[in-house]
Amino acid sequence: MTKKEVLRIVKEKHVKFVRLWFTDILGFLKSFAITIRELEGALEEGMGFDGSSIAGFARIDESDMVAKPDPSTFRIFPWKSNDHLVAVMFCDVLEPNGNPYQGDPRWVLKKNLEKAFRMGYTFYVGPELEFFYFQKSTGKPEPLDSGGYFDLTPLDVASDLRKQTVMALEEMGVQVEYCHHEAAPSQHEIDLKYKDALSMADNTMIYRLIVKEVALKNNVYASFMPKPLFGINGSGMHTHQSLFKGKRNAFFDLKDKNHLSQIAKHYIAGLMKHAKEITLVTNQWVNSYKRLVPGYEAPVYISWAQKNRSDLIRIPVYKPGKEVATRVEYRSPDPACNPYLAFAVMLAAGLEGIEKKYPLRDPVERNVYVMGEEERKKCRIESLPEDLWEAIKTTEQSELVRKALGDDLFYKFIENKRMEWERFRARVTDYELEQYFSIL
Image (cartoon, rainbow, N blue to C red):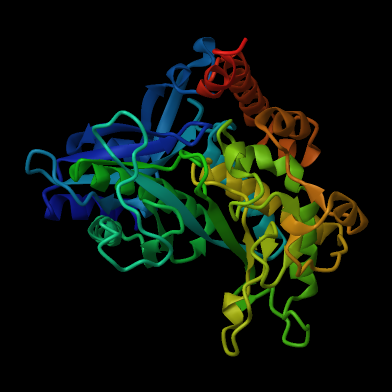
């Protein structure tokens, strides 16, 4: 959609306000609204705001920033505000001189997509975002239902919530493939149809907002927290990804036994080689590492296979005539990450594998969780970081992540994560009180 088309549509539909959206480095959606009178000027020159008030953005002495709407992201919000239609657009964050702000996550993803484009590729992704519904009034995570995987019974009382969410997403132009109850009580999944990575990162932000909005309208609470409850599965964001050259899937090779091209194998090898380094970005919270433990279907070990869901990387089985669906499923990310940065570092790792022709080791078709430590060592199977601190120490040494994010955002992200770890490390938890208070 062009600027001219945006102005025409808001006039025809009598839109009164436009929300301008962007994200901070942690992936939180930021928004401010403008009236239609200001829209044309915003499309031409952008709207100024105080970047020093946004996490990870400019320092107080360099606070002026400009949010410039991307007209291709224009859409009408599914709910009215005081009987008025509201439109939304994602923005690129600029410096006052018009240059891209290097700390803007959307710009970081664009920069990495440009590298893929120079190599002849378009990057497509399809994330599977899981989440929980909880009773809103209890003040603690209390599940809404007792359903299980793919349940269609009275146990799945949230099926209507999913339907409302899908309808709202479709109204905003976000295509949904399917939705279902997930394995844990009150856990759900709505899968988005694969798209180019920039559009999908935008759609992921819309998805998280709409899921929460629909929940609030029904007096429940939706959470994308990776591990809100002990003893059951956490929520992941398994990310399906592929590279295309024009309309041809560069990952497909009919003659290979796994139907994977050399490009795909090098890409997978890149993901595996740099998996530890990118985990801080794909799993950015203290709580993320409560999910990445054995026994709950979340990956812990760095391996790949075609069918095995205990591996970090899974290759969905090829179906004849479905060459375009050949893809890599990277299973460690969680739905609370910043999608712009997560897609950027996964792409960077894969592209480096292609550039440097990393060799791909044999797949592991056995359940990695039941292997002994010695057997895993023999198979050269390493582990993902066990906690946020280990992830920080690994990532801050990563040349790949620093280049993918850019110096400005990289160091601010590391600093923010160090602060989070220090706050967590000093906190006395309920577990410590339960275990030690009465005996020590």
